[in-house]
Image (cartoon, rainbow over all chains, first blue to last red; front, side, top):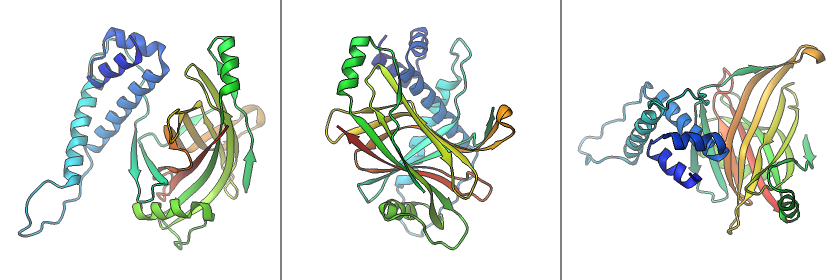
Amino acid sequence: MNCEECELLLAQEKVTPDVEAHLEQCAECWALAAEIAANAEALCEFRDEALATPPQTVGARRRPSRWAMAAAAAVVLGAILFGWRTADHGKQTAVPPAILKIKMLTPDPDVVIYWLVDANERGTER
Amino acid sequence: MRQVLGILAAATLVAAPSIQAQDKQSSPNVELTVYLLSGATQGTGTDDVPQDLSSAVKQLHGVFSYKSYKLSESFVLRGRSSGPQEFAHANTQGILPGTGLHYSFNYNRVRISPEKPRTIHIDGLQINLHTVTGSPSNRHNETVASIATDLDLGEGQKTVVGKSSINNAGDALILVIVPKVIE
């Protein structure tokens, strides 16, 4: 199995023994799998957060806002990734830290912002 | 405050020796200028950053509600770009002025895309802020804040990487990284 085949299966939530064997040998695919899992975990963290109620505009035409569509897409993605994470992989794997990376394009083409949301803020090492 | 560190990365090579030699000759270096900022939720609202960062800080003000941004440290880290089968680690460390906090900054490898405009891929970028206690023989590091991620940087672009709420006051840890390819 090559990396492209592995990535396709990961995207389809199909963690087969071949995929697992490839992940053990390929650091890049392992990192991708870990990122997918971390994003899923971070999205799950958001499920319990209360969202502010947007003000209602009387007489306004009802149509889904971009934010609503983005939120819906995030929920769908989260559900897919959460399903992959909770699938029976056949063996126990290390749980990566929950990190969600958000890319923001700014009006200045020379400035790109990435913002990280991390559930594991603190740790201790010797 | 500004440190200029020319650190040519120690390489861990897994390719054949002949390929390694070829890669070493053809691999350009990548110079990362790294600015370490803090975003404050309290205070006077006056920024304290160099002119080079004014465009990035302007965009940060447009997105986030932090009252001010302050430069804590800046450094330049230079390392060799890696081929597909190798890792050229690079790292630097120091102490943040005025805080006593130690920092360590490192990455596993940088790769350069062949197409123009070039993109610099950083694998395993990590910065760690920590306190150091104990004796030299029994050193104890406690992590205060950290950022760990992979990044794609546009050549010459200012790429901002940040994380909120690194302390009880809700301040932010922010990196601004400007890559430059040295042929």
